[in-house]
Length: 575
Image (cartoon, rainbow, N blue to C red):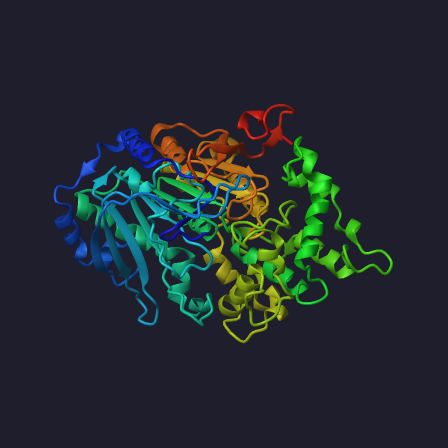
């Protein structure tokens, strides 16, 4: 999901006094990088940021960077919008975190190609700096500036924001700007814009931010971190793979790892939803109920969560819902059964993609009818839509059809009029391989990142129908196969959360991953099983639900007794 001035959250916030004292404690805990650095004259120091940045300060080709504004922003208090105390699940809550005084720097990295758009960025420089920086990832196809003021992925909102903790925070639009009436993917017709979106913009903006930190504080950061979700998770993996010297710690949540495979598999499913295979929302609910009836108890607790979706795949057959005789309601037609099977079947390529990948895994089971945060969960939002799929895409389209059809038209065919239902990867094999080499964050060789002391945490939500969590599991396995289990354990963690959808509803996902990363990078405290929570969004901000966050390959399992709202009633067990 893309960060903006507001952050989407599933939990509540602590009182401001508690947040203030907690910020002091966290800053004290950051002393390993040196004492907190205070700027003597914040207004003058901020105004001095207006000087341009030369191309020589940026490690990839550019025409340098211009600073468009440098504004000293006063400290502000946390605010909540729509904090209704519905538990469970918590409501959609719009959170504007408390911020300290900081210098907001807006600017643009200028392209080499005059026809390419600039890379816009925002760098937030706190007046009291802890010597670290945190760069935020984007979402979707980007094209909107990430302001890096909100909460990072999976954050507990009873914890201060990174900026409030003293981090310099950094965001970008990845080198193109969305416009009304223009397809989200149209930027890919320009080669430089495509490379910037794929990986280069994040490196360029990182280098710009380091230059600004040196200018503001007289030295660069002691440690650099990156946190991203979805597309932002892909960006984080790209940085570990392509630019291993640039970041010390990376959190990659629900990453779009095999980007090429996702576009192909999503479009394949979209084609099944253009005709008789379309599943209207009531039939999606029918399917979800049948899956729960067969698989909910696999983790020892009937709670609406399929805790072992891999085992569920061995037990549940959508054909059990096939219409009998002349029945046409409360059952699935043959075409609909086949559509469900299509989603859960691997997509096979006839030629290798980058890093030898030849397939995209089928999806798992559970969470089919999840509503998510607003209409962004489960089958309906991501795979089936609210009406039969068609072109041009519109409000009833699934996101897989919206994203995949545009990727085919602008990334592969490079023809806005191309009919994506006629797309066959083998017909565009050279171009598909070229895009795969740019976009797919599937390189298992992380030896350079490991050698520089980098730490990587990957988190997958097993009820995610936006991207496939099993692609993330496959990637982790490839890293282990390439580097060995002992080596991988020294710097990589994979966690999975059954029941959670793409944006983190359906099961608790809130955890202070920024502190987890800094503890691992700076104190050698390697994370083991963690705890994820939901919190009320109003006073007294109580914890309402907690579950273990289990290291792969273990999964959450109920112990058979104890309060199911408490993490202690569960264990991380090998299935």
